[in-house]
Length: 129
Image 1 (cartoon, rainbow, N blue to C red):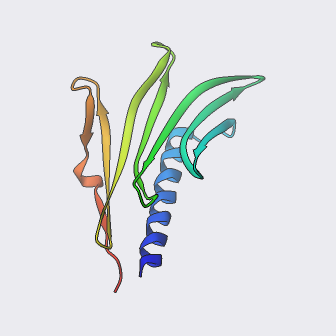
Image 2: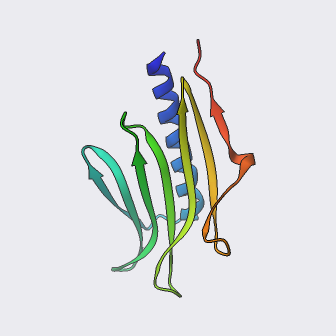
């Protein structure tokens, strides 16, 4: 049963990341990925756009995990050429309760300077018995 929950979590994570990357990539094939790992876990990833021989910042991901090495947060930041820095964009948080995993999607609100929950994007996956 734990294996099924773990597998579902991994599948949901892969789908979420693929959706995020496909939306962000806009079908460009000139993206370069630089991953950062710690203790065997992916904790960050910076994506660069290649234009000829030069690279420019594009999007950055930060990942956090709980004590059981389950992802608890996936944060994405976009590069601002105007401000010349990374700006918060979205955050996906994972809550593990019993055999269930709840995925909550948050969008950054500049006026409030915080992530705001998008309730219609919240999904709970129940463990099969």
